[in-house]
Amino acid sequence: MSDFPMTWQLGDRSVNRVGYGAMQLAGPGVFGPPKDRDQAIAVLREAVASGVNHIDTCDYYGPHVTNQILREALQPYPDDLVLVTKVGARRDENGAWLPAFSPDEIESAVHDNLRNLGLETIHAVNLRVMGDGGHGLSEGTIAPQFERLARLREQGLIRHLGISNATATQIEEARSIAPVACVQNHYNLAHRDDDALIDTLAEAGIAYVPFFPLGGFSPLQSGVLDQVAKQLNATPMQVALAWLLQRAPNILLIPGTSSVAHLRENLAVRDLRLPADAVAALDAIAG
Image 1 (cartoon, rainbow, N blue to C red):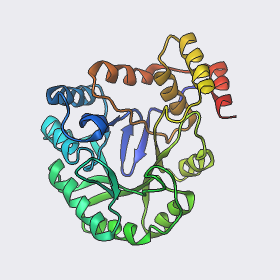
Image 2 (cartoon, helix red, strand yellow):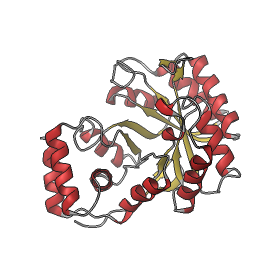
Image 3 (cartoon, rainbow, N blue to C red):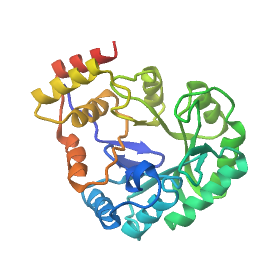
Image 4 (cartoon, rainbow, N blue to C red):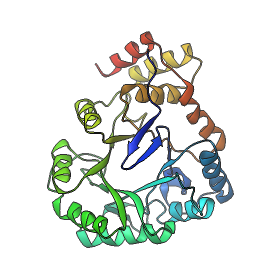
């Protein structure tokens, strides 16, 4: 298979397509402090030293914990580092994920992110739409919330806007309000509802950031992935990530981990090229 670009624009910045998702830096269930804060800091510093310049975070991871660890580990932030967060949810005292989707809650969450990250401006903020059960999609207007984010962008608190867990209709509504720099949705080898959307966004120069790279696989689908991985002397996660890299040039990866060794495994996909027969076998998983 021909080579493919390893950078893409995220707003006005070019980022390496293999980034890092900070969710796993918090405690179990993405709640409370990590078991080993020093290790969490080491993972972040290793990621940046290894060329990661796109980190996905959120103030309701912990809550607050992940952003505070990012600040401790990386401030003063490297000039080329792009931090992207999301708003639209909160955690209760038991760690449950609850909507926090009113325009006022959206604005308050932006200020929480700024404070905990130690920033005056955030590179990008995703509006996280809480669908059925938190992760499912649901239609409905996002105009009041996105308009508030657009106002904060005009005030200079946010550089770029994005949307997460959104339908194509909601994405178009957001784009009618203000420029959209990134879309963050559930997408992987087995879950390909966004195939057409990804290509549309690529034509528009908009980054697509998939979450759950191994989520929702059946045993049969996992078996095919395991077989391809064995043939390539790679892990199933590495193959799933490499397939995403080769799927479209605007896909930005944000695999997360709290382990330096696992981080290095994830970053190794930058050098993994899937041959045509492997891509064909993997493409058939969604059939």
